[in-house]
Amino acid sequence: MADEQQHRIQLDVPRCTGLGLCEAMSPDHFEVQDDGSLVIHGPDVNAGDLVRVRAAVAACPTEALRLVVR
Ligand code: SF4
Image (cartoon, rainbow, N blue to C red; front, top):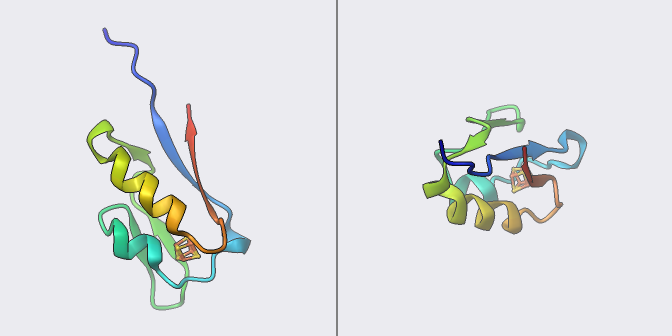
C-alpha cells in the first residue's frame, strides 16, 4: 500500500469572519452558512484537490485556515 500523506483542513473558528473567500476558491470544501459560520466538507483532502485547497487556505485574510498532515 502506498504511504501517502493525508492532508486535513483545520479551522480556527474565532478567527473566521465568514467572508467566504475560501468558498469562492473551493466551494466543494468550504460553505459559509446563512449565519456566517463556515462548514468544512471533508475535512480530509484528496490529493487531486490539494492545489486548490492550498490556494483557498492561503486566500483567507484572517489566517483562520490551516492545512495539516496527519
Ligand atoms: S476565507 Fe477565512 S475568514 Fe473567510 S470564510 Fe473562509 S475561513 Fe472564514
